[in-house]
Image 1 (cartoon, helix red, strand yellow):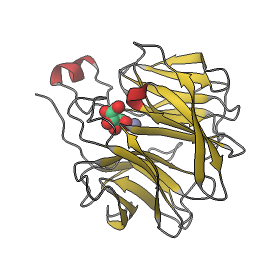
Image 2 (cartoon, helix red, strand yellow):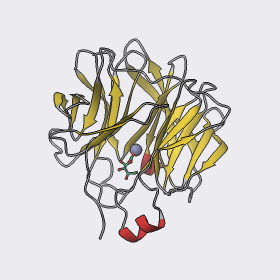
Image 3 (spheres, helix red, strand yellow):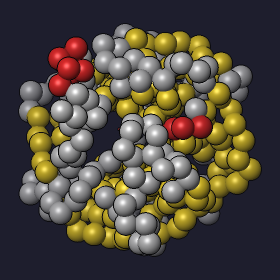
Image 4 (cartoon, helix red, strand yellow):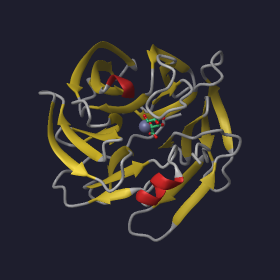
Length: 272
Ligand SMILES: O=C(O)[C@H](O)[C@@H](O)[C@H](O)[C@H](O)CO
Ligand SMILES: [Zn+2]
């Protein structure tokens, strides 16, 4: 049996406590990105909607619909920029992991006034997003391309341009999925099917460090903890057969990696 059902759950955990909150997002087929909101609460990219999430009840209030003419599409990864816009991209139907119908997705941003902007299309699996510390560069991963691209980023206008490739991953190392950036401007990339997080230097395009994981499909990472020196790593179990799950009992867990000697920055919150 292959497990392909999605569960639309959001988990909340505060480091240093034992309290894990878990809520199912109502009326959402999937939920793929959650960001804090400046006025309190959360905003999600769920199915083909941006919406606000009440973490107590799971109630989602839709803010905007995307990909109206591609009803099989869904949102994937997303993150807020330093001006409080929520960037998230979509993908087409995916029967086999990392091999969806190609170039069906679009990268969007949700402005503070809830207006949606479409930045570019022909995305296959819209995934990791990160900005450098002076907000002049936006990094972006379209998973099947097996690379990280960079754009010139205009923080005031919320626009991007001048796309170029900054990192290309060696074949056989998995597929780049979610990503974050550290205080030194280095990227941390979760390699789906690769059992590893790579730290890469976007200036030289080289892999400078790898963190091996006890699961094959890490999906994203971010820095957190009191001093932003703990790397939190999510992983997938979706698409796994029972046999695979038995081999990888930790698949689907969230991990913390400590003592890295590296710090990250707090996540930006949605400003609308
Ligand atoms: O973060 C994730 O879980 C992944 O991006 C998935 O959503 C993709 O669909 C794909 O299976 C992996 O490339
Ligand atoms: Zn992802």
